Image (spheres, rainbow, N blue to C red):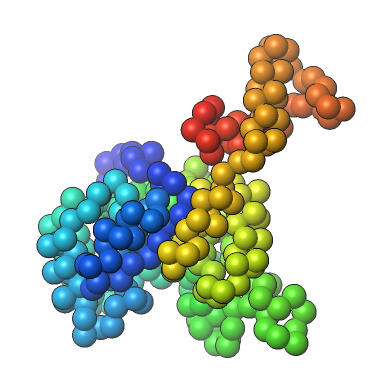
Length: 283
């Protein structure tokens, strides 16, 4: 396999909105609301509608720089048909549902976001992340819960911390983020299915930002604004980051003190990460 440019595509913004590929009437509207549209050929489309969804994907092009196509798992008959349809478009970034092996990612021959959402995929996340054309990782909670033989990914009413993820899901979320960082790939946080639970969504966005996620996926346009606002640094954060960078330059990259806090290499990297989220500085 030839060298693959892993920096060929990164999310141009943090809000990645799923859109059923069999609803071309929604494509442009979704694109106008979100930073990235994930045209979904998998779970959002019934098996009987997937041929029409592939035809719609081909016949209704939108900005390829802001589109990811979610394709079906490599173990399904739809997988090859999905890849053939993508080949007839200008889209060159796919999200492989239920990624479980490095080989299945390599076989797409496209820039691929590996969706880690099965027990096998979770245990192989580092091998998957190491693949050259794996440009990013996302994790999924609901298919993971189903694969475990479980009934829910989150604690329910009457349990501790209702609405938050159960421990196995938190472990897979952490493992996915660590694997992405270890291999220099971006990470996308999972969807928040309870559309009315804005407080829970905002809490998860804050945590995702703190952990260096590049984006959060969502299922409803109303969630987009919360994601964008959550990833956008506050004025105070920007001011702090600029002062850290300026102080580091003044002290020639050495350790110094600012606001009573020691500033060293890791703190400088954190400041640059803040500035990267507003389009200035480099991570």
